[in-house]
Length: 343
Ligand SMILES: [Zn+2]
Image (cartoon, protein in one colour):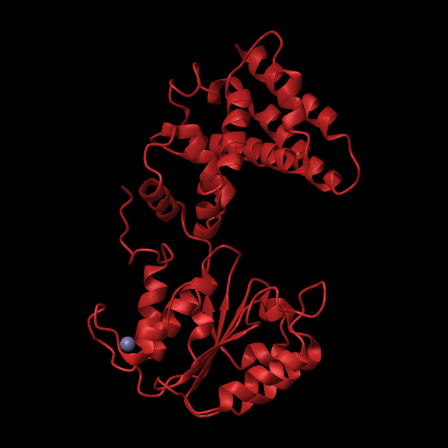
């Protein structure tokens, strides 16, 4: 069974940030506009919705099994059902153009709804997801509201691209940063959500998540990706001196997803080697069980640097029409040769 230190179903991590938000919501008069910003997968939207629940609660401190009239209406699956919680866009697919822009008509409706008096709650909360998608006219019309916010309103802007917002909009909001989580915290989350992973797979998942618990959760919930990841790791950590790879594996890694994951995994292994070098106590990742003689001693620095450069290069080239199958064979060949030559 999984154990959670957060309420069940809640987004993992960010305890200090949650504590800060709780303090803010307890102030008698709180700032009206917030900018939640940070990389994708850091839970900005989920935590905004969690926080909205406490901002909307009509009777803070009531027991969870006896919700107030406001909390009763907040179902996690459909937060938009609460009349005092307004979402822009209402659903993410709710936009009139292909780029998913938030248009001025939608924004005007959102502002008009926000101006109405709250029905069940002490205030109304408006959440603008992907605020960088506001068109300039939409952003300008929102700016007027931010400059002169209606009474009893909280507006939360969410973005992973804060620089794409109008500076005038940014400057009106209290900045709440969602940084990537430190490695130790990501390790705790991973070990809680999925205990007992093989060391190299654990390492690859940590790397691929890039400090974002949402990415980590997505990876854990994607069996086909994890299956592919296991196969890639198997290819990379098991040195075979003859027939180092088979055509099926090459084919598997030649589609876009496989290729990207392959490059990511090589990078994870390389970064882990650097970390291992820098760490006094060594690292449990390359225990004997995962790689017989340890990758560390077998992959010299120069070769690591070469692989790293080549991975970066292939990432850039991938947007053009390169032969991914050939690139996979090239990398596997060099990888095996580099390790084999050290044996
Ligand atoms: Zn309540």
